[in-house]
Picture: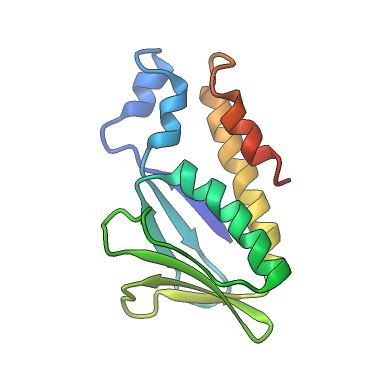
Length: 148
């Protein structure tokens, strides 16, 4: 399962609900992305640019599954030295975070990863839409919808 949790340490979501800041600012929030499969440890990646990362992950996971291309994301980490990597080894996808703390990787089948990622995209879109107050930034939402 892939879980995306928006980190709202300064309670900015409340400011969005009150209309004090525009709803589209939610796309810039920090997030925790968790990859949790079976009895494996949870692989966690903290990101400062979750919306951009999700856009890039959409294309990269598609390339990984269709062409077997490994992909790494370096510039999205909460700290500068973090990297999220998806790699095909034999018939499985290995998801790893570097520098690797103890057991910060998971193995999942390509089919499960694809279905979970689509579900996670749908859930994050629903979250965005629950705060949406106008049509501004609809282009950004449509980018994610293209991958369904």
